[in-house]
Structures are given as C-alpha cells and as structure tokens.
Image (cartoon, helix red, strand yellow):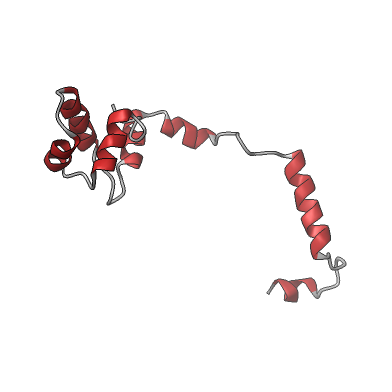
Length: 107
C-alpha cells in the first residue's frame, strides 16, 4: 500500500539508507530515553496502582502472599515452610522476596 501511495510522483523515492540516516538524526535531536511519560509516572507513584500491576499476572504472588512471606520470615520460619504456607511457586521465589530482590514496592 505504501508503494502505491508513493507512485503519485509528488516526492522522489527515498533510499533506505537515507531514511535510516534521517531517523538517526531525528532521534539524536529528540532523545526520549530516560524521560518518564508523565501519565505513567504519576500512576506508578500510586502504591495501589503499582501493587495491582506487579501482582496482576497469573504466575505472580499476590500482595497478601508477599506480606505473609515477610511476616513468616521475620518470625524465623524456614523457606520450605514459608513456601508451603503461602503456596509460592518455589523456594527461590520466597528467598527473593525475603532479601528484597522482588516485590520491593509491595508494602
């Protein structure tokens, strides 16, 4: 379809290399990397929204499971016992929560 639209003869055909050079130049002049989207940043700062996103997938722990893992670990329970009580996927998942490597946004 794009080829059909360009047949009109309005503008000369642009070579692939020229198009890539133009895109590279534009991206250098208008860098977006590292700039947060204001709408997303505002939502992500809301702890309730962050919790909903972090725990939304099927194979993820719920916020209540994360809190229970931390509570049971604070009481000195073993990783195996915590895994069984919280129905976590595996010991690694529990260990990562305990050391704060994952689910750190969940209060």
